[in-house]
Amino acid sequence: MAFDELVQNLGGEHMQVVQITVFVAILCLCIAIGHLLEKNRWVNESITAILFGCLSGALILLGNRGKSSHILRFSEELFFIYLLPPIIFNAGFQVKKKQFFQNFFTIMLFGVVGVFISVVVVTAGSWWLFPKLRFDGLTAWDYLAIGTIFSSTDTVCTLQVLHQDETPRLYSLVFGEGVVNDATSIVMFNAVQKLDVSRLDRRAAFHIVGNFCYLFSTSTALGIVTGLLTSYSLKILYFGSHSSVREIVLMVLMAYLSYMLAELLELSGILTVFFCGILMSHYAWHNVTESSRVTTKNVFAMMSFVAETFIFMYVGMDALDIEKWKASKLSFGPSISIYGVLIVLILLGRAAFVFPLSALSNYINRRADRMSSLTFKHQVIIWWAGHMRGAVSIALAFKQFTHSGVTKDEINATMITNTNIVVLFTTLVFGFLTKPLIRHLLPHGGSTDRISGESAISKDEMTLPLLSTEEPATTNLLRAKDSLSMLIERPVHTIHSYWRSFDDKYMRPIFVLPRGNL
Image 1 (cartoon, one colour):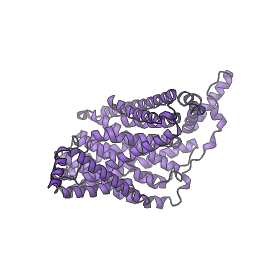
Image 2: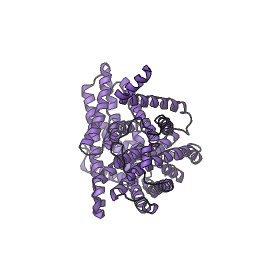
Image 3: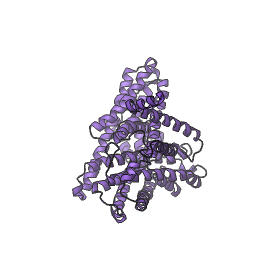
Image 4: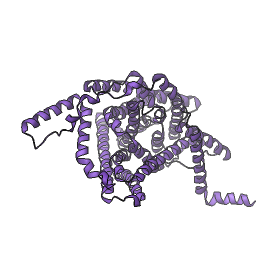
């Protein structure tokens, strides 16, 4: 009797503490089971977390006598303020910068132009097909939001099968496109929120593009400034070995501050914190002690891992949310049709830009004579990698169709359940098929993936300045003419090489401590 009273008191007075305790315990168990399954590359962390979330949700549902499968109530604010920043910052902090920027043009083609094409395909397709399936009531604003929600990718499954050492370029393209794609989707979603849907014409399209370019450029600039400011502060202060904790804390807080400043200024926090991560890893990381370097990498990776596991486990629980299923407008048959339409539109949206943009990238790279072309097999892997939908899709759907994770509107509830099912289906089905597909297409690790043509321009040429005050004007003019010729023939490689020269001569002396001072 005393035990029953204790349980009732805990449930009444400390309900939130009990919920958090249970959720954290389940999260720990999920991570432990995921570790045991780590060697099985068919099942990655995302799939493990979703399946464990479904199992936990089913047990909770039985324990609550069919009332609810949740322990905690998910909200878009929780995702965008606390869970998303460490995921994106870690992506920027851990990115292989050389590979990323050598493939920058192709990554931006897939991650920015590709998202625009995918949004158009998904928006137009759903706008045309949903009413034919007896699912109407959505506004033009909702259809545009659906386009951005289902154009956001999750490439975790593919990246866990690809080997960075064996296929460096392919890995860089899939990873880079995944990060830029998520950033572009969120920026586009925010741009759509500000759009006057009563006037959808050519001017509105230009307005979306202009708003997107403004958000993209200003958010990137804010991330760069914050990263440089952090690096310079660490250089000037140089805490040293006696204050490693302060070094780590300053990096973490400045990264989070960059994200919150972007949100405060109504910019894209995801872009800001991503480029802040790149700048910090390039400069600030070299201004801290060796122990702090190891610790920061592990801390950022840990926070990102916990946030991703949390999200996918919640997706599994939310798939059994009885309230949303009861409020859903469609019966079983039409619901299956809606899921099928969304998945087909995702496939078509990817195909509409991956293969044409790959051909464009190959043409430009052949003209530059810099790196090998993307083969058809590589293009198929890139196409396949973007089919999985994940955390960003879930968060955007909650932001569009719920209020603090709750909705009683049947249309909104239907869209939330649609998004959950699509995320579950694409992650589980496409995720399970990723390993055999890549093994079939790249049985020997894809040896043709290596970058070629690196020596097309001599190293001595790249270390020479564009102009020199110590040489006559005729020599400067000849060098400028040669530099312009190299820029036209090999734009990406030339810009990257000149940036390296500028970085070594000007940026690093300002923002990085000399090695002897560490």
